[in-house]
Length: 90
Image (cartoon, rainbow, N blue to C red; front, side, top):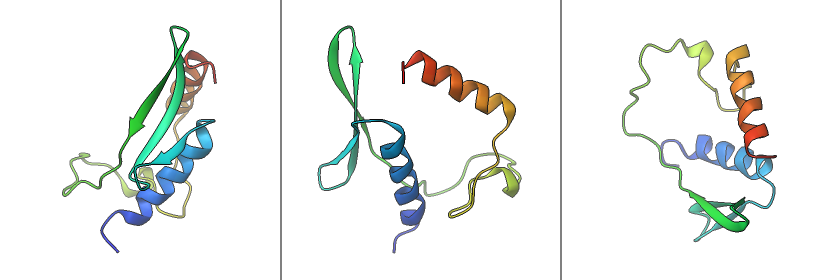
């Protein structure tokens, strides 16, 4: 299995469960997320690829999402997600 495949599957599953009406397209290579913008439906296309090299800086491993393990989320990140959900009317 190619590097990052398990992580991509986990992220895809999470995105599909987070955005109602989202679906896989183009041989499961794209995630399509339908949204309403200015009264009309638009589809946001998401394609996931694993980076060849990590550039995330000096992240402590306990703060990085582990496949099969819940990620640690800060209070600030929770506030940002809540704000985004409210903005998107989800």
